[in-house]
Amino acid sequence: MTNKIELPKLEEEILKKMWFSCSQLAANALSEMINRKVLVSLPLIKILRLNEVPRLLNPEEISITIFFIKIKNNMNGVILLSSPLKHILKMADIFLKKEMGYFKDLSDENLPVLKELSNILCGYFIDAFQKLFNKKYSLSEPYLSVNPFRVIEEFEFDHVYIEDIYGLVFATTIKIPEEKIEQKIVLVIRSDYVKNLLDMLSEKVKLEIT
Image: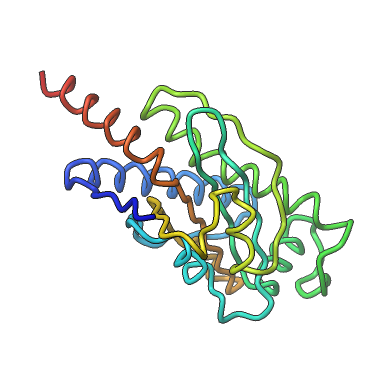
């Protein structure tokens, strides 16, 4: 099955500005929470086969940690936070006010705060979509995975390694230079919703022009 879609230039620019804006808001909020400088990379927006998504999640890193939240109600999508395990454990050290290197693994002590961090950061991105499209989206609880190739099977996007399924993918990287922490934030929207999204965006552009 092939369901490749095209991303018109004007709509791409609008989405890119929105994505960068909410990435910056999320970075600023995180900076205030941890009292450290937080930087964001330039946004990536691209149509990809869904089975290519694991490459964005740093699959070369053996000990990768992925928190993902499913987006429901008006969108068939998912948002992910992906980090090498040592980076996410540093985040746990910071938030739980431990000395750096205190946590050696995920545990009942640090998982709740890491899931809450995922909720907070993802909220900025979902809020931006809600404002842009005047739609209300509901979110699942954060799920945890340590396998980037297996995790996309859990998105309920069908047989992504068998069928030729495409999606609209947004990505950015949040960096905390002082602690040498990097975390990728990736939003994936399945193609069957993307056409609807682009139609809404085109209509919004027409209304603004007129």
